[in-house]
Amino acid sequence: MSEKQFAVALDGPSGAGKSTLAKAIAAKLRILYVDTGAIYRSIGCYAFQNGIDGKDAPAVTAALPHIHIEVRYGDDGLQHMILNGTDVTKEIRLPEVSLYASQVSAIPAVRAFLLQMQRDMAAKNSVIMDGRDIGTVVLPDAKVKIYLDASAEVRARRREKELAERGTPKPYEEVLREVNERDWADMHREIAPLRPADDAIMVDTSDVDFEGALSLLLDVIRGRLAD
Image: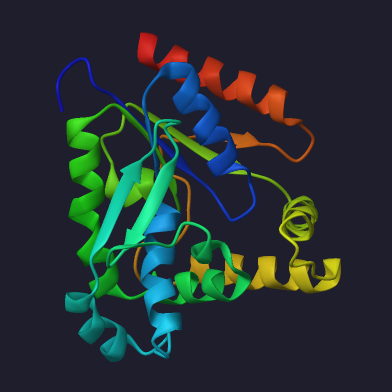
């Protein structure tokens, strides 16, 4: 990474607002946004489409040589996921694929398979990268590390609204249960569990609207870059 390049690591649980805020920050700072969750979702999508149990580590590992993932950016700067030549940007957001993504991300071979790909992107560009272990594992030397959080109830409400807008509504109680299950799985996996980096700045968005959170994060990033 050149001296002019920098990396922002944005970690946190599902529904904390990482992706939405990271996209806006990337646009404001004119840097590349890398949604690592979408990359893992692409692996989960392959498993789902091919009837592979996401918890079956040997089966998922055996499938990796047959998986080719590309990250492409449109003229609008949005990230598109290409799985074996097919754009799966929409498919990877399906609720069932979310579960598979959480399962396959706990498999060491999957994390090793994708690690260098993520680091290469940061080596070639100034990036804001969001995920579960960016500041702790993927980019431990990132100039800026932020851990974004919100209460499970708030994140479930956001997810409920998102699903309704997509035409795939679910009851709030079911969404909250899934949020809590996802949190437990991410925080208790043996490989790279979800946790703040020791030097991460903690930001809770439970009681902050989008514009307030965006302004706060931009101030944090610019302050760290100025140090």
